[in-house]
Length: 407
Image (cartoon, rainbow, N blue to C red):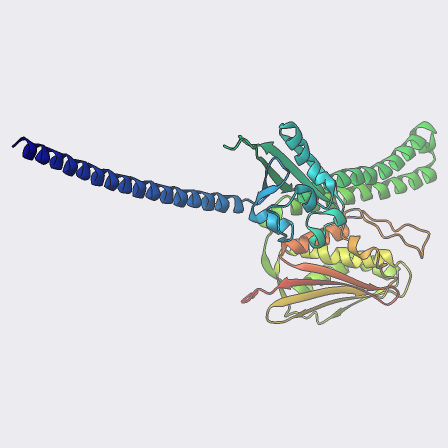
C-alpha cells in the first residue's frame, strides 16, 4: 500500500515536472519569438528613421557630410554628391575629395580641437570642388564644421556643411566696383568745374566776357556729363532693384520708337556725316513692352556706334524681323569694331574698350550698354554681340513674341 502511494506521488511529481518543463520551454520559445519580433520592429524603425534622415538631408540645398574621428566620410547627402561630380565619397578620407586643401583645413581644425569652425574661402576656377563644371571664375565657399554628440561607441562624429556663396561674393564685388567707378566718374568733372570756378572768382576773369564765356561753356559740358551719369545710374538702380517688375508694358509700333531716336540724334548724325538706315522696320512691327526702356535701348546702341566711330562714312543699320515665337532686333555698324578680348566684358558697368587705333579716349558714362542689357533682361529677352573689326559689329536682341497684340 505504501509502495503504491509512493509510486503515485513519484508519477505525479514527474508529470508536474514535465508540465513545468513544457510550459517553460513554450515560454522561452514565446519570449524568443517576441524578442525577435522586437528586434525586427526595431530594425525596421531604425531603417525608416535613417531613410527619413537621408530624405531630409538630401533636401538640403547645401552639401552635408558626416565625418568620423579617423577623418573618413560616413555620410554624404545628394547636394554633396552633385557638388563633387557624383564621385564616391562614403568611406574616403576627406583629404582625398578636396582638390584645394584649404577646403579641408576648417574641417581638420574642428576634428583636432573639437571646437566649431566656420571659414570663408575664395578659390580659383581650377581648384573649385565643382571641377570642370565650374565656369564662374573666382568662386566662394563657406565651410561650417562642428562636432556632434558622442556615439554609443565613444567615437565622435563631425558634421560639415559646404555652402556655395559665389553669387553673394560676385554681387558684393559688383557693388564695390560700382561705388569705386561711380566715385571716379563723378570726381573728374567735379574737379574740372571746381578748377574753372576758382579761375573765374580768384583770378578776376569774370570781368573778361570772352574768357568767362569759354570757361562757362566747359563747365556746362561737364555738368551735362554729371547729369547723364546720375540719370544712367538711376535707370540701372530701378532695373536692378525690382522696379523692372512694374514696367509699363503696352504694345507700340517699333517704327515710332526708331523715329524718336533718329530725331534725337539727327544733329550728331549730320555733323559726323554718318548714315543710319532701317531694314524691315515697317509700320506693322509691334513690340510689347515699356516704350521708355526700348527707346533707351535703341538710343544707347546707336549713340554708342556714333561715339565709337566719329569719322565720316559710318553706316548704322537698325533692323527687325519676327517669326512665330520670337522677335529679333539688331543694330549694326561698319565701324572699327570691338576687339575679341573685350567682347565678354562690354556689358559691365563703366567698362570701356581701349582704342588701340586712337590716342583720344572715347567719352561717355560707361553705363549705356549695362542699361541696354538689364532693360532687355527685364523684358525676358537676351542680347548678344559679334564683331569683325573694320567690317561689322552687330548687337542682336531676341525677345519672346506676344500673340494677339494689336493697336
